[in-house]
Amino acid sequence: MAAVRVLHQSQISPSPRLPSQPPQRLSFIDAIWLRGSAMSERLFFYDFPHPTSHFIHQNLPILTKSLSLTLHHFYPLAGSIRPSPDSDDQFEIAYEEGDSVTVTVAEFIGDEFHNMSGHHPRSIENLRLLVPKPAKSSSSGQFPPILIQITLFPNQGVCLGFAINHAICDGSGSILFFRSWAAACRSTESVLNEISPPFLDRSSIIDTRGIRRRILETMHQYRGVFKKSSEKQDSLLVSDPNLVSATFTLSKDQIARLKECVQAKGVEEGKPLFHISAFVVTCAYVWRCFVKAQAYDGDIKQYLIFPVDWRSRMKPSIPSNYFGNCLGSCVVELNARELVQKNGNELAAMEITKSIDGLQGRDVGEALMATFDRHWEPARSKRLTVAGSPKLRVYDVDFGWGRPVKADITSIIETGAMSLAESRKEEGGIEIGLVLSEKEMNKFGTNFATDLLEIFK
Image (cartoon, rainbow, N blue to C red; front, top):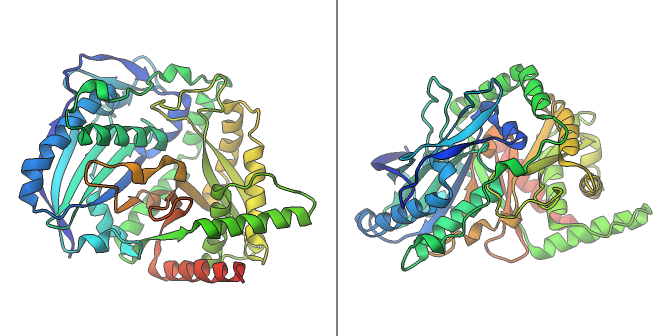
């Protein structure tokens, strides 16, 4: 039976020592992620053919020193998320001098590194042993922004596991932090001025439509749906040891062929599409394979919900190094019969493109609220969401041991999502991660492979 043995735990504070900072109120986009104190879980696997003692004495001091330097710029991660003392419905990020991040060092027992870091179906129960576990929130309702766990596979590899409260930042923000820490770790002389500081001003996210209160009211209205969903997921984790995580890859050529099919269908229907992205055809293809694997009734509505980075869409635009949440989302609706038909992939891709094109010129608050209103019906229907993005370049996060062997998002089990990342093996390819039962994963894998063969006939 797999297990982890904790070797060491430490608290890492920003260095040089940082005085207390003014609290930062969460933006209305941050507030969306307060529900359930949602944690985003990421794993990075690296080859490390050395004994545990070598890592503890040679590598751990470098990791902790570079983390301390990085936290000087990313100090909100060392603070806490707490209710604002002057408001009943506002939360803020507070950093007090001496605040720190918990780093746990553990050793994995019961499975081989290359089995845990593969693309084949792996036990999600075992994978989540590599994710740091948050302590229960205090009576004051405070939450840690981040937890870090370093798990060693002696003479084989190392896994860096992160649990980040989504209210603190989105995927772009977390990857910015990972890259900054990794660059400081690789540096022969880690110094503060070598780390590019993030843009921390959350007041730049302006609630032009006054939707913060509407968001909180809607979340309160649907608290029963959230509670039941959370209880279902918790029981699923305990009662279903057959849940597995697997990764599938679409090559550059396969993506190009999928684009050609969608373009041809658009021309046939007199609706030529001038830009079909790799993201669009990947989401469409996986969505169709997923619905086929679930064998849903033909009339049941299916929803695809995917994130949209709003940094460049804001007026004025937000810097690309903004550290916070700047995500909107799109919802696409089709019924199961439409998706599984012969041209279901092309239809899905065209609907996704239409949804993205519909964002042009829209205010972020307006678009978010429109999506937010539609989001609750999927909460009671069949849906697939999307986490991550190939644009984040997770395989560029190098701490000095080379590129990751594998990168995973394990929190997709909580949200019913597929995860997306760039292919490690081929520029232009995309990796797709899923968590399903073994039976469902086998069905999905069969659909994924056979449908590609049909497309390339």
